[in-house]
Image 1 (cartoon, rainbow, N blue to C red):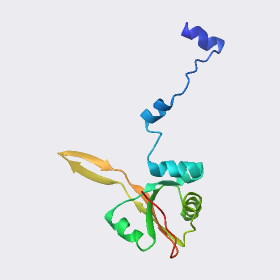
Image 2 (tube, rainbow, N blue to C red; image 1 turned 60 degrees about the horizontal axis):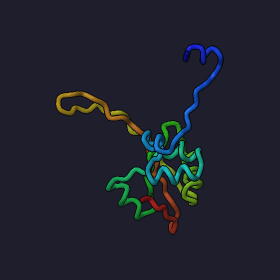
Image 3 (cartoon, rainbow, N blue to C red; image 1 turned 90 degrees about the vertical axis):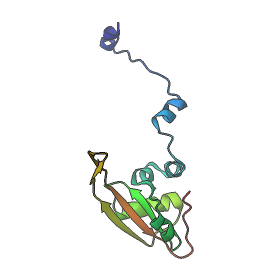
Length: 130
């Protein structure tokens, strides 16, 4: 009977549940929630804050590090930071980290590369990264 429904043009629709989205991981972390509230553009540019020891120390001198989309450029990052956090960056540096070949328990694999942006702010400006 499903074949006849396709021929007749009937479509079966399922109501979307909030639990289905959470199972797929679409709910996201707190950082992604803040970004998605700002705009879809900012969510497509800024992936997540890049939290390491080095970037945490740099936060004290108004430098913040973010993983960004591979197609994003400096002006897109500046605009996304302005939309999400409400501060205007003084300078943005972008670095591309290439893929790496790794060996783990005698099996070869690759660690994916990414693109990161170092955002410099004026004195007195802060970004709350939790």
